[in-house]
Image (tube, rainbow, N blue to C red; front, side, top):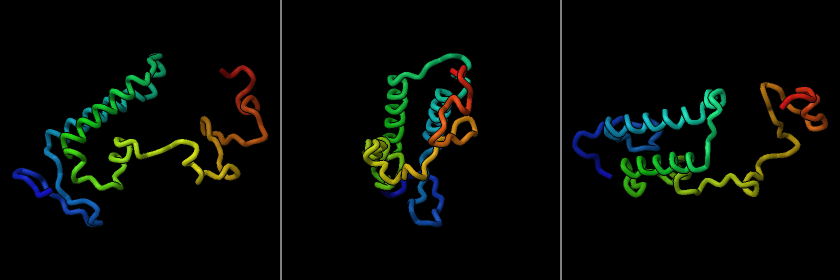
Length: 131
């Protein structure tokens, strides 16, 4: 993808990317949508008792797909290793079958800065009345 007139260029020292930046207007749209998505999952939503639905998540993903397509039509210019491309093309698989690299003997769960150990119950850490 050769650079167009008005395209900004920054050299990538690792040579993973071409260094061609998107237009400033499109970058602002990316940032605005990213901030909307962050607000959607922010902890203040719990205080407001606002729920996130699957429909809301899929709507944001569709918006991100559209923005990426505007910047990279047909994902042209994005490498197959790019995380955004993997996520938007549903190539990133987080099903239990693909998480074989998680060793159950070495994996722990952390809740509210406390490590939960296997033999103990949740009530041992937080009491019987914790909801």
